[in-house]
Image (cartoon, rainbow, N blue to C red; front, top):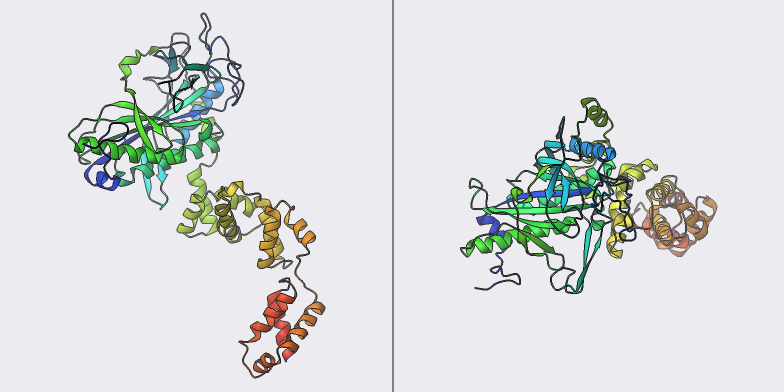
Length: 504
């Protein structure tokens, strides 16, 4: 029997696997909250600080140190719960999740077990083609992060084969909210897309709520991807695996696809899927075994004796609800209606990451159609050419708005506008400055235009005779000669008017 690198029977082609098995996914997303201090102490938190400089006796688990709940973290957790259509508990409490690992200095994690702060919610997720899939949320609970282990030597930074390990406790105690879905069924072959879209939708919500920077590359948002297969949608759930700490949208999608193919291969060979955690490998999109998955009983949960229950008043919860900003999906629907884009046009804008850019360009004075033309046309081409994101181009929505106003006022035409765009992207300044420095303003004085027209007419007398004979088709050659003579800085419509007047 042929096996893969990680001892799995040769993978089944994804399309074949989803024809014969029904994938069920579950996703646990951890988001680091952007509070100034940690979950249970006054240690500050900031990314990139020197190792072990942001600690207190509480975050280090020293004897006699007592925790105090961060009120801002509780508020942020409630904001997240409300945005996910959850019920907010009238009272909830923290628990100790007991396990030993070097990055957990207390030998337990303070989390929430049977009494989460938010529960029974949902999020409607829109896929790239406009299909909407509802994801049921089981719970959103508060907890603290662990520290960070760095394994030196060996391969791929893992503990196996490492020469030694270092521990940084700066992250220990950073406030987290973990959002746990119910089993996501009915996605079928689109399970990877649903998983990716769900995590992306959460990231967008975290940002608009301003509860986290939500930068996946920094680990602000991490996803644990659960997957199981069953013969049919009516069959009992299969044995699941949990791929840990997947930190990009693309990787979430790839992890689901790989696990579908891997588990299908095991089941086809008559084997049994092991309930375990797995590591995701960015280099090839594969997963490898971690540890056998522990059940809740193995963590010996019990109520945290050093913390009183959290009991948010209904008045406070409603105050928080009243301050929630417009959520991403509602905003997209509103802008779709305001801008008058076709459904496919709006999906293209969202998928290209251009929504914020177009909205800001409209605010700078451009029409929605003009803003879309620039960002989805010429600028999208430039971004693809330079292999960067649209938002990373060296031009701002305000500059695009200014550029479009120059076009609308007749001071430059579309052809010149592209030259101005080149200048802005090259760092030559705002559009006005580029136009002035390069001498690109449209020639609006009829005097110089008539000189160029007379020269073009004198050079092409045969065309003049054809036009005088009633055939206006060849007039384009005269206009082209005038535009060339004025380096494209004439108004083509005005040139045509003057040419026809001159010919009589």
